[in-house]
Image 1: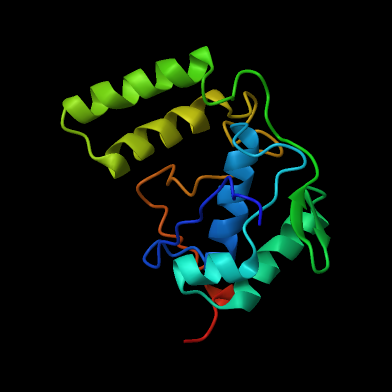
Image 2 (image 1 turned 30 degrees about the horizontal axis):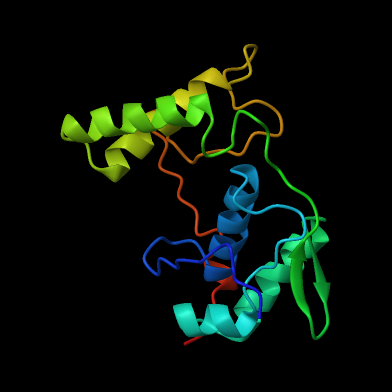
Length: 166
């Protein structure tokens, strides 16, 4: 049996469905160079044993990744990385990663918790990647859900509809 390079962590309180958490964690590993073409993802059984989620949830995530052209499933063999999303600047040991990690350590030393730091980073990303003409997130950029004004009362249950019944 191949040694798995990635281990999924499911946060049942995040509001994001488990299958989307698997998809996002896989994409993050692809962007950081943790997963490379040819690497095998954990089997559905391994993920179920580690996370106690429904096997169909794992298979749904893997099908989504396959639909996006990121992995190939080989019946009876496993699911393998087809292509990487990594850029030299995003690899976990890059200079940008080192600088960002140092900033995060300073933020933590200043008393910020994970959510505070994430809010600051998200706000900075939204402002830097905003469309200069409209101030809206750039085309193709995922929206963070960060309110842009005090009157923004919208909320989303995106992803909750796909949760497995318990």
